[in-house]
Length: 234
Image (cartoon, rainbow, N blue to C red; front, top):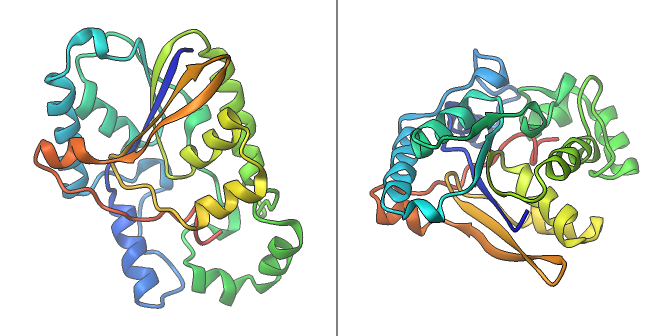
């Protein structure tokens, strides 16, 4: 792989519901769908269409060789709006969002209120290795991401995935230490529809773009900085 790019999915109705639940001090995020089926919000659809206009204006030789999307609806729909004409588009379950198990749909307040014992375990194990019952740790997500990157080696690839993905790619591609990666994630929110990319240089990977959103603004959409429960609440 000579280049790898990552676009976070457009704003979803889950992102909007999570922001409302967190700001309202509620325990539970009001979403009726399972996480894999959460659709884009109207604003997220606009972000996807802006991505499509951006790619349509780009010379075909600058397109990625391969597009790979998370199987979650919000990522698939963003990829379809952005690159519906791309001849090589795949869906790969290794790009799915982190699974939260018993903490699914809980806000930060909800986790503390309903599962205080899990907060104790999380503090002891650390965020990277903590696995909620029935869910995944950050390290679990990294293992499947590592497998995917290995299989895609030698190609120019664009991924459509989730907020957690660029943090773990920095750990994987750049060798960012666990402590530094978690501090980076704690202080960052990946805008919906943003582009982060790396290029191969002297046998290693160099961060080329970080959370860029100019393509959205240029093509008529506003970026949003909504957080996912996978990186915040748990």
